[in-house]
Length: 91
Image (cartoon, rainbow, N blue to C red; front, side, top):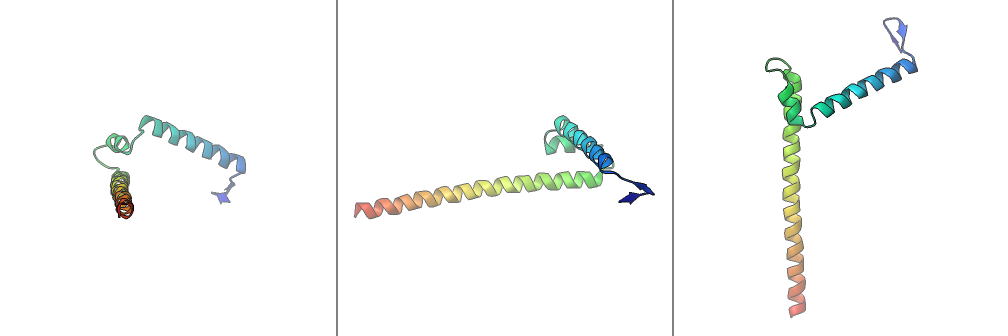
């Protein structure tokens, strides 16, 4: 694939990918949580990044809440099943 008339070789692509992965790893190490990344953004500007992070935080919270509800339903079903079983054995 050519870019501005210059070919991008596999070695160049690999080096750029490695550099990008290193930068991303450094960013993730510096700001380990989504909230930390959101707090690090400047107060003005970065609206798209702020919106992405806020959406990711909201999705994470909804996922955690759904997991709690699922665990509660599963536990309730399990106790109900054991109650039915004990009622059958008691007869």
